[in-house]
Length: 291
View 1 (cartoon, helix red, strand yellow):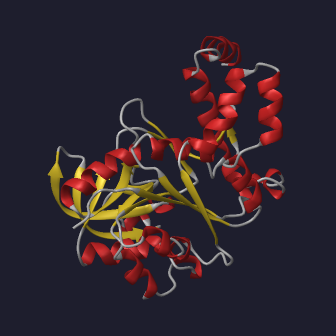
View 2 (cartoon, helix red, strand yellow; view 1 turned 180 degrees about the horizontal axis):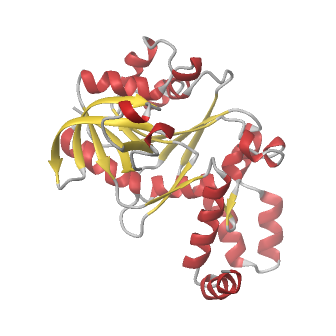
């Protein structure tokens, strides 16, 4: 069985309504964290995990997403002529960092429908899934790289999770498990429920936008019924695979920023700014004057 994860799928076809009017003209994955689009930071997480083939499932304003990962000859020529080497490198890097493919999701009918469009790209191999609403930071191993290690070791679907607290779990999905496998961080998953009621949730382990799956997930998606919000939910497919070949819930190391939320977006910019070599101290001193 092929356990090496060599491909990644990043669904980014949503309308980004919580960031209107900005997202009227620019797709939400292009929201900048400092001077990089969130989508580039997510893609760097993939590349730093040793994966070079990336598929974006795109939708509204797809041409803007595509243009960021293609060369810009006119801009590159201007930067080269003016000797702006560092800027030139930053412009060229997204073009060369990975092998990018794009597929259009014409109908917004749920996360499972988005993943289904990756079947030809995956071509029977295991693959990583990274949702565009979730930016992850970890000083050591990238989050998706942590999940890939667990998949390659155990050969089962791996779901990246965090403990969110029982009072918050109804905003997410909730994992159920029957045993701990490693160090209090890896669990044998028996069920996952999308946005359960607080009193019905069995744990506060919530999936947070990072997954590694075998290609058999596509057979499950084909037979899914509509779930929450009348859509085809990837969570439901994960629930089915847990009952079949099995799945693992892994509490990853790192910080997650919710880019689908305005406060989450602000937190990402502040914390990335504080880590920035040039901006960190200046930003820290400025924040002190405010608080």
